[in-house]
Image 1 (spheres, rainbow, N blue to C red):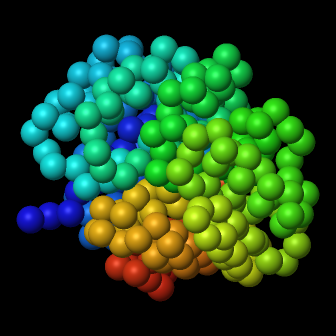
Image 2 (image 1 turned 45 degrees about the horizontal axis):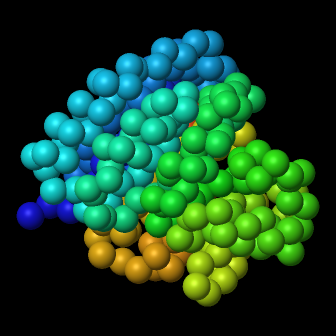
Length: 272
């Protein structure tokens, strides 16, 4: 029987983030992916030019349809939107007992705001307590806490602990927005784990947050521990970023190479 995961997130018409990145990640890591679309974005590697939210009732119906028929081993939640939709998703997942990875998608790589400020309280009240893992980047953690962005390792750990106190079972503080030659993430759980990787000089990092959270959910779906899932997803994502320039997609922030292990060493004349 196939290992499965469900992504609840927005659609990226450029294919690099959101539902598209999640499903590519699941597939690359040996997981059958189902999806619930919360929003449709008009988006490419340069900008998000429009967003259309899917009605709450349709989102709830999608979740009911999937969970009513398919055994789901893990869920990844990404872009939501208004407070009412966050509450709708939380209600729809009340009976679900598996692991949930919550990626608090708030700002796109282009700078476009994807989560209204009015929805912050709903996210904290209704979904943080359901999250087995919360995966904020530095701006998202700061926005959730109402604090300035963490500037060093100590502040990252402190903010991660505060977010855990707010209800998340564990928090992965992502350091991709930091400075320096090394990118450091901190897993704040029953034990605190530091994850380092050399910072890669590329602008092709579109969808990293979505892909990271989905890779962790894939690991949990396979039965890995949280530490195993985060550690293996961290290494997989670093390789996907390292291979991103091979794709040559778009004129802005291109996507990471989700299938770097499947079709590596691309050359222009053999690109699918």
